[in-house]
Length: 301
Image (cartoon, rainbow, N blue to C red; front, top):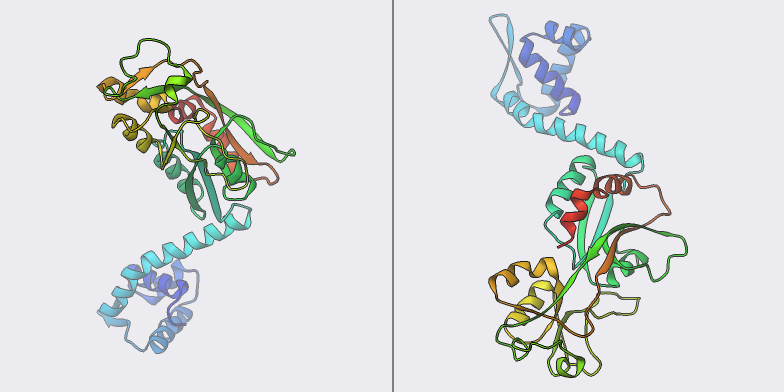
């Protein structure tokens, strides 16, 4: 027999009952079968596991060590069986979520905790995409579900589903020390074009890239994320738009100044998006969880 889930279970029961006969009752076996299993374990492992003292069976230190380690082994085996059943029932072994860079990241830990609790057999991953990169991640199979896909899909052919998430409002910012900071008039293109626009590069591979905001002939500086956009604006390196919620703290501190421009960037509609060819338990769960006011409001920074 050696060591197996069955042998560990027998050790557990013998340890609690103190006799082969009582262990047999608990395990619904005849005493001779328990005695045989005990001897077989000792023979195959090559160590003494049981001692008779005062009419009771006691475990040796080696057997107690096996029991201590065996508890988590049995739990792991049980979890392995449960996860195998879940995967056999159609739950994905891997699930990838793409997050638009303009969406608030703070709800992610709570969301992942819920997903891991509900689908422990699944390996989850989250990546950030920019602009059309969110749609591209679906088309190019880099993601199974998107949070914050902008506007409408470039094309769908009926295989892309969406659920309205909300609108992201933009604010145009300059540094307090920037030449435009003291301008009182509505800023027009001719004046704005003199200064670099700070934007995050579209992460799309197959689809056409889009820019947050840049005028024809204006110098563009591409950076990694919104934090860098804001830092560059604060330092006066350039000018540009960021989501209003993201800029709230900097505006309150006075490290940036909001300006009005002639062609202001309109709020952008964002969506949950997914491919609808398969019936996914995880996607169904996500939609039930995320299509609530609580989550909708948290994503919109």
